[in-house]
Picture 1: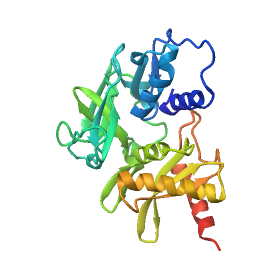
Picture 2: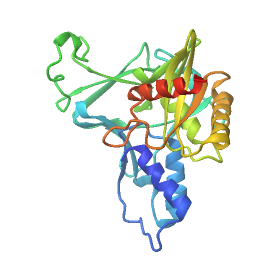
Picture 3: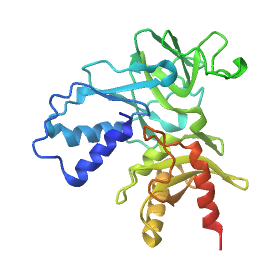
Length: 295
């Protein structure tokens, strides 16, 4: 399942409690992929389902895409997932990854997605090891191209590697993903990843922020990140939600980086597997922004 599905299970049990007699000791492998794996979700899943017998080493962070017939890399079987705490402000393409103390200002926890799957080769297109770059793959399971797309528009390097559009780095021979190229916003020269902004929003206490979408937006000459948050709240309650999420983002990323916009539940576009479609959400943002400024 994607990471958000594991988080939904956590939310459901925290709200309603686990079913009587739930025994998860037989769950040998819980694959977590299809979207960035969040360390906070893994910790919460262990906390909530550990008393039901779930074993932390059963969780298997992975990375894949349809263009590679699904799996590209995966963690070692039978080992506990692990993460690195890095400086979130040093994760732009070409940046040298800076390790920081967990909980320090600007710290971001990035989960290892393991090593390349059998038959797949993975490389990070970066100036040097330990720097951020685009993840590129090749192998027998990797597609030869998109049907009907001209050769000059196919996403391959000159030497035949598939350009995934994902950014990451390698450490201890394992792959860490930090975000997608097209979902990276540049505000006043600083790079921000949509997944990072959304994760900060979800951690806000006192509000149920489950589904949100962060995207770069501009009002005149002012660039910022617009964060759409699905909520049933309205009026003063919705205003309190906006203030709380904006304050949380400002505390971690800096002032005037993001504006929060409440939208109706189930209004943010999703894929068939339930993942948020950020670029498709731009139309929703425009309509929300226009409604906000109308007299």
